[in-house]
Length: 326
Image 1 (cartoon, rainbow, N blue to C red):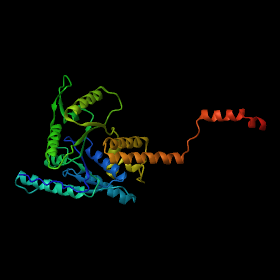
Image 2: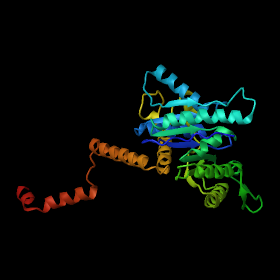
Image 3: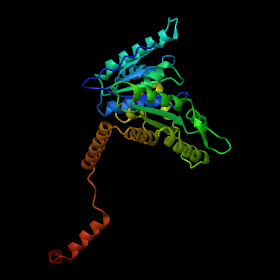
Image 4: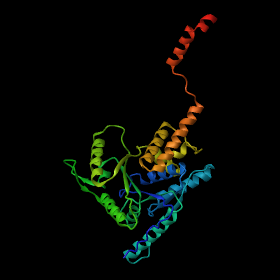
């Protein structure tokens, strides 16, 4: 029988964000890395855990990031990072799960009292570690590509009518882990589940509208919020080899030429951080926005509107002083 180790109460408990989807290729690691960097740049202390021990894409992202800092002699924000490996050498499934549970909970407890946020990257498949991580999340972000191929992991859809037949494997897993969390002693907070639509087309395509309608119906049925994610941009994939995020490009001498596409993508990341609806994050985003507007106003004083300039000139012409001088 699995022995549950509770995450002990303390004065400080980090907010845990799990990025999960049982389908690969949906943009989980890209989303994870940008959320981590965004939070660090807002001044938060962030820890990260990679439980996709087979691929370790997030871990390689950090390795590439370290190589870039050494090669380019620049400083990039990073995090305290850990990998949780699947149990090996255990004869019984129960023994393996107990081992994985204990090691994950140890890292979670260790980071929770020292960090503001813990961000967890999960594998694109079902596993004990993934279910465990979901059950301890405060926020779950599920990136999906904007197609019914990806939607299938959330719900089965009738091909003739387009109606939702029933929730699918990942939605059922989320429901089960919400129940596990609710039953956990001393817990009175639910999981905020966000489904993030990635690779959205800029065209008003018929398929795009159908996916949007299906997501809206399913969100009311199983309880998640819908957020707009990242567009289909090659730059997201290109940055992996350097371990960079879009948020690094405008703030550091990274050697990458910044284009309009980079700036537009950066706005997508900012919007995602707002969509987390975490008070402390929203507050700091607003502070950053106000600071930027203030600095721009000081650097470039606004000129008087043309109409106001013309009216001022006309008033001067009609004044007695102006006529006397003339």
